[in-house]
Image (cartoon, rainbow, N blue to C red; front, side):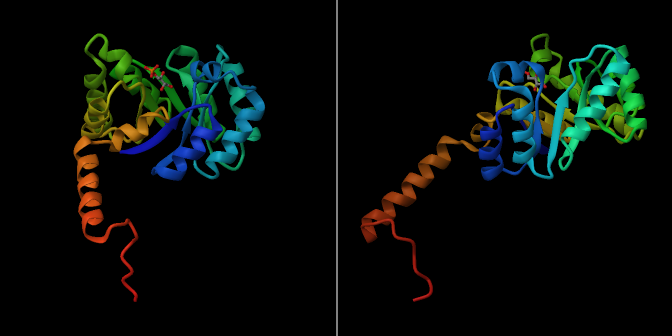
Amino acid sequence: MRFLIDTFSPEAAKHILDYYPADGVTTNPAIICREKKQLKPTLMELREAVGDKMLHVQTMQTEADAMLDEALSLRDALSGCRFFVKLPCNSEGIKACRAIKSKGVGVTVTAVFSPMQALVAARAGADFVAPYVNKLEDVGEGLRCVKEIKELFDIHALPTQILSASFRNVRQVTEVALFGSHYATLPPAFFDKLVYHPMTENAVKGFEDDWQELYGDKKPIDLIK
Ligand code: E4P
């Protein structure tokens, strides 16, 4: 499984890309509104931040024809990165998915809450489907949904990739990785949690204490001299 950053903050995106093996950025209208930034210049900054990596941006249009127009204009404005338009998994989104794919633009069908929605999106040509794991876990279905989407895609040899979103804890991320989700998109603050373990911190403290006791400082070993 690979990682994406769920954010509308170019600064946060740059920071995570500097530290972690992330393949790009996803965003959505809720995340955009939370940041309270100007839309167009911030999108441009995000494009700069991701370089030639992926950038998934959701349309706010509600009808298929308007979704297509917006997808084409976003694709043109954000050239240089690997752009994917995010479309909701409803009838207008599925219609738009087919039209947008026929124009050669990448599509992520989002707000997926059932395996059947994912199957229809895949048949419509979606590059990615985005199931909302934690939101569905509220009714005990999030992890099972990802597992069943993976089974359906494997059984029917569908190339669409699973981009799992909405997580509350690291265990959920581990579970979707075990089920074969291709991507997980995570808020910037989540990345440190992926690698944090108190026993690692204890081990590092032990190394430092031993070193301090023998050498009295933290200078690196000079292996050349
Ligand atoms: C999808 O684009 C988002 O990752 C998702 O809505 C985030 O879900 P959350 O609000 O449960 O974190």
